[in-house]
Amino acid sequence: MVGGAGGQLRAAVVGTGLIGGAVLLRLRDAGLDVAGWDPDPATRRYAAEGGVAAPDTLEEAVAGRDIVFLCGPLPTLPATLTRVAGVTDDRCVLTDVGSIKSDVAIAATAQGIGHRFVPGHPMAGADRAGLAAASPYLLEGAAWVLCPAPTGMDAFRRLAALLIDVFRARVVPMSAPEHDTAAALASHVPHLLAGALAGAVQRAALRDAVLALAAGSFTDGTRVAGGPPERTANMLLGNRDRVLAELGAVRSFLDELCDALAAGDAGALTARLDEARAARAALGDRAYTTHQREFPAAAEHAGELVYLRELGAAGGHLTGCRVEAGAVTYTAGLPAGPTLG
Image (cartoon, rainbow, N blue to C red; front, side, top):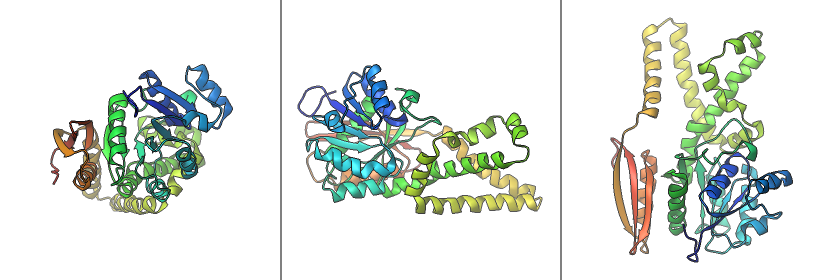
């Protein structure tokens, strides 16, 4: 792995909680020159005890780095982005791991750093928090959304190659608005549903009896309710309009289930449950076809950008990104059925 000047790539992670800590530990284990910074002194000490450089200041941590991962709380990202951009070289690639992409993408464009900022979101997590709960394996093989922009294709390619190489990530290229819409139903609404189910049990007259009987269906359905409430609230509020829209679709489907149940209509109830089962089955049994697509590395990037966004919107992902001999070659997996233009 090489950096911008031809030497070893130098990385930094700003915000070393669960996800930031997982990024930090994986980069360390991959042998990269990596530093971590967190506003909490105890967290910095913990990182240093684990053999990771953990300077006292953000500026020291990011100075001279080729890539910086911004992993702090969602509300802090725009200000942190401004701070990091001001003390890093123009060739330093900046990315984040937040669960909402549109706002931070707009902030980067407004600051004139859209050419080197690539919004990102690894689709993984846990019901714990903090560096002590982080694992270098947490993000291995994860679907990792990256949002390419017209002026930032070089940064996108560099970051995609790193994520595929180090994390074995399935890089999903999407526009920021499409990510936020898809994530609302894939991640954000499930947090609301888990909270609703767990909250109803907390208020139930037979709470302790319910918990004594709880098995896989309850445990799986409420796992994310165990996460930090502030983190979940920030995510939901940051994507409020899209979450509410998708929650409306969930309510509509739930109403159909309730109506069938109230009417004693076994056929309608079975049909709706079978429809739901089809989506669940597709989650773990998706067949992909592999293909390659090549574009001139230095030419106008409109066609490349269209291809990448269509790939992500179709449920596909990148498994390879190579730039050599004046061309960029993508290797990708595409679900059986969709075709790309």
